Length: 264
Ligand SMILES: C[S@@+](CC[C@H](N)C(=O)[O-])C[C@H]1O[C@@H](n2cnc3c(N)ncnc32)[C@H](O)[C@@H]1O
Image 1: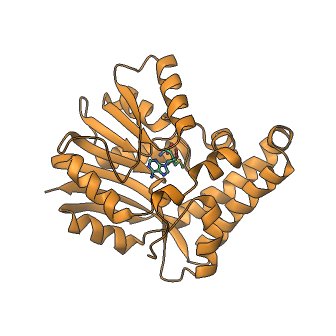
Image 2: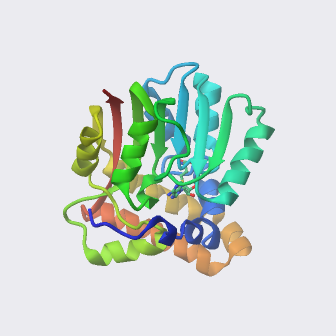
């Protein structure tokens, strides 16, 4: 993995606000804004073995869809943290509307400097967002710090492989992806931070197919709506971005991992 920019230089708003990512991805995936939507959340939740009453931190919580699902389905006490104020505000509003404030709260903040005390969570959760975080080592160290002993970390993330090129890395910069971790890279970071790996899965092929399907849905169901609301350039930019990710997976350069580990 090549180290990228500092956190302050990663313009997450360029993707989710300027390119209208938040609204367009939600049309396709719902409020669980990652490829595969809620179905992927359900799979990770089963693998994480979450239990009622556990305190869970969702790092990079977006619109709060996964946090609300884990609270309402598993009875977990969820805390979400996200860098983007628009996402934070929307997550708070939707949680209030869903009547889940007693179980779900949010903080505005950075994944690399978690504003929480050591050993304060039973589980740490993340879905396809840590690709935006410049320093993955710091992120995993922070996750380890806030977890209790025997706490679980469960996450999916976009990955790169040894075939990744600098050209493709460059193309990913506008997507607020300063760098990607590799599957063995995440395994090493987890081990170095005192985790026992419970499962590590390469789910890259599935993600390639999910992005391919996302473009079909976008074209067939939402093309006119997206062009009317956000313009042709934004529409085409989204189609091209998803296609770039499909191609990257097909060429074996990019993928996705699903990890569950326990803090010793
Ligand atoms: C693809 S969305 C995923 C949101 C959520 N995990 C989900 O699956 O619905 C990525 C989120 O990561 C947030 N993010 C990116 N970099 C971050 C950072 N350094 N600290 C906190 N949040 C960050 C973005 O603002 C965005 O809301």
